[in-house]
Image (cartoon, rainbow, N blue to C red; front, side, top):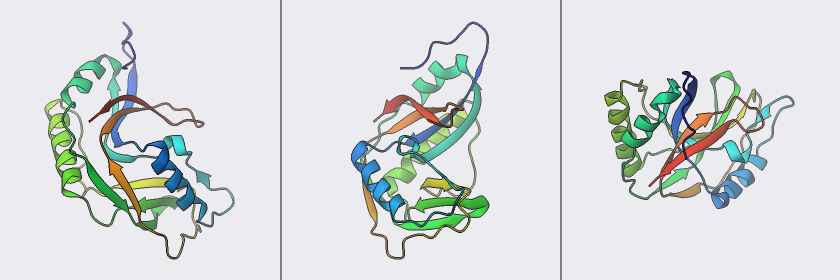
Length: 176
């Protein structure tokens, strides 16, 4: 359910994401526990794990209904295999997919078209599905032979960034 829009304009930070269920979060937790984490790194909480489809950014909350309606489209179920633990610049520890399944590529492309039609920004870099596990993780050591994590994806979500470090994100609406 979308929050009611106040009379006065306020902005919300939105993104579209694949949102894992409890079972897959358990597999991610096992994977995350197999890393060696440096002191001071910030681990993401299981409630915040996701694969971003599109970062939308700050939008007027009065646009939520129009955005929510426009991005409502069928999502063909698919399997996403997360099999590449990596360290990215600026200390990001991530678990990536080495291949992008065709249904995911198609969903990403269709959602991008709808966002453009709403005059919202769309990232032009190549799409790399991944779950961020930790920040400030320079020096983290990924497991040497991690088993691939297989995720049966059935839909996607419209999500708001909360600004709360204890729970960074909140799902506004699920699709699929």
